[in-house]
Amino acid sequence: MPEEMTYARAGVDMDLESLAIKALASSLKGCLRNRDGRPGEVMAKIGHFSSLIRVGDDLALALGADGVGTKIILAHQMGKYDTIGIDLIAMNANDIICIGAEPLALLDYLAVERPDPEVTAEIGRGLARGAEMAGITIPGGELATVPEVVRGMDLAGVIVGMLRPSEAITGEDIRPGHAVVGLESSGVHCNGLTLARKVLLGEYDIDEKVFGERSVGEELLEPTRIYVKEVLDVIKNVEVKGLANITGGGLGNLDRLTGYGFEIDSLPEPQEVFTEIQRLGNVPEKEMYRTFNMGVGFCIVVDEKDVQRVIDICESHRTRAFRLGKVVDEKGVKLKEKGFVLNY
Image (cartoon, rainbow, N blue to C red):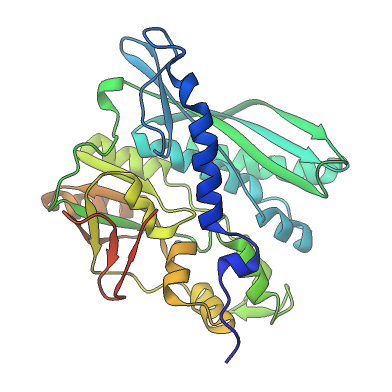
């Protein structure tokens, strides 16, 4: 039996990262009131998936920023850059829909050690495809050549969306008894890839066929699913109480929505890539569920009576959905059949 592998041992300490985020947020608290009573006034609490600022009596802008992380290393190893742009759109758009906003536009930031027109053209094709899938524009961006800062490249972006302030979905209406619907992920997405690479590429070649007809590299490069169209359709037709993008921290991201807790009693079977990571790396099950999405890429909290309607709408967009559990009084995300609790 191999020695237990964890995300921290692979090089990413989520607990330390959480402390770093809190330290940064603490330093920024004073600026949150700089626009009080004027356009730009902050309307959403720190810690939500999206920032929200008022720009008029009946209009607010949702803002988000994210990158593709170490998935770009896989793109380099595979010599295939035409899908990471989809990941960038997904990581940003999936965050701002969590507050009920319709995404409008994204600006990309590509930092490179050395410009390569063929590579940037491939990245652009992925960005264009992702923008089409999310229904947004990419009106500009930045390419920075910074050889003393990066080795290879880094890809990130900033996204903006809009909504009426009265229609913001903040999680404040969540109550015990409400149901949680999960939307199927497309695989690993963009979180936990440092651990996934350490484990899988320590055993297999990147082009080795392990997952049916797919190689390890192809499986890990599978683009993050974009949930914009199905979630906006759900919001239009169902009274939604809360929305969570299941990224780093896994189902513990539900903890960000409310002071109540969640009991997850019907987990889906994770995709093969997750079971193979766990098996090869002897990764503890709780570590798997706090690092990866484990097959659930997004969650919607609604009244129990609306569960089937949400599932039907999602599946009309070819996204599999399923009831995961319910909201409870006790704080934390309890995975009932696993016997442990996740917190963000």
